[in-house]
Length: 472
DNA sequence: CTCCCTTTGAAGGCC
DNA sequence: GGCCTTCAAAGGGAG
Image (cartoon, helix red, strand yellow):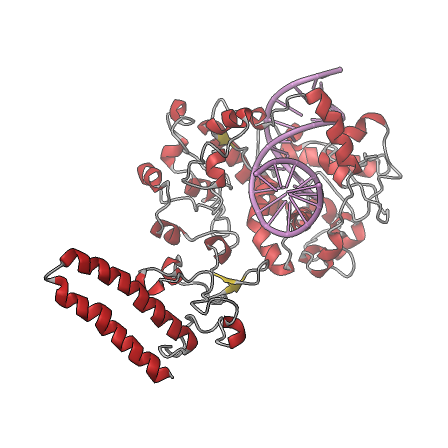
């Protein structure tokens, strides 16, 4: 049977390839068309044979065979033609590319050639962003891929920011704090971007990764069709680029550590990850936090230099009827069930706070003493001199709920309203960092230390009068 | 598709 | 000056 098919193949080849070539000299155009048509039939048939009897399989090849068993049950469902995987074009032999050709480089060894889609279960090619969950692409890899905005990058002389798949989702994507914390800003903001002509920044497209055009946010390099835009107000907002806020210290810390926590905990929900990161942030030493505060300070300085007229207010959502929507939003938020992700942290807490069952060890003196990161008895303050919020494990909002105005507080307050076991009141920020240090000085300065001492004194002198995060 | 969740910090507005 | 609100990142989940 197989020989028969091979014979048919040979006959087809001679009939549709060689034979027309002979006549090509006579009727060139007709023969060219004929050849093209027959190429299709020939290779389709060859594909079918390849599917049925993988005669041409090279040992070790990850081609068509592995995911498609030639069992009759698989092929019996309708057309016995090529049941390719979703990534194989029926005319694969005719098309000069495949997924392999599009892989942005040698995939990491830990990645199998095919990754099962968690939703569909279908093998798929890993997205570039999945190759490295945190740093989408290495600078070299980025440079090897021509981004739709590459003209701009070349114009700017920067090979530069890794472009996330969703566009400029990250304002400052390529954090390289692992390699060198001090070089972060300089690596992301080239000198010519630090001192640009400020008047042209907002009009020239995307001079800075903090600028996010809503259109680009959806699909980089593509202009959305007008039909997509239905709201006139939206259309107006799409016109002007969105300059994002500079990242604060904690955000910078999160950006760096998120991938690590995800890898350790095998968690993907950002809400849970952020809870863990918040705890780890508190368990950081003063020096470690100071690095991020300094980075954030530079970020703000740079941002203010790049966009002198920018205000954080510009990014506030435009509320049509603010007076009407506001109370409703608050009520909705406060009635929402708070999901406690913290139990999952037991699996992968930070080393500084994972002593025994103490999930929040830094918050309690005993655990602070037991913490390996605690060099002194006052670890809970020394190790977190800049952490102005101490949020122990339990929530006491039912016992410490404040009436009236406090109920309309931020989302974090409402979101922390859970009915779990109460233990300790939540300490909110007694001294805002901005109040302590408006000049953005570095944390270890004497002034800041004095402020921290006052912060510490406040905590010690008023242990029970602490403001709790309350909602109703 | 949009918003929420969850964290901390910064900034702006209001009183 | 204190308090409140919003947004910055992230990605799963819900509507």
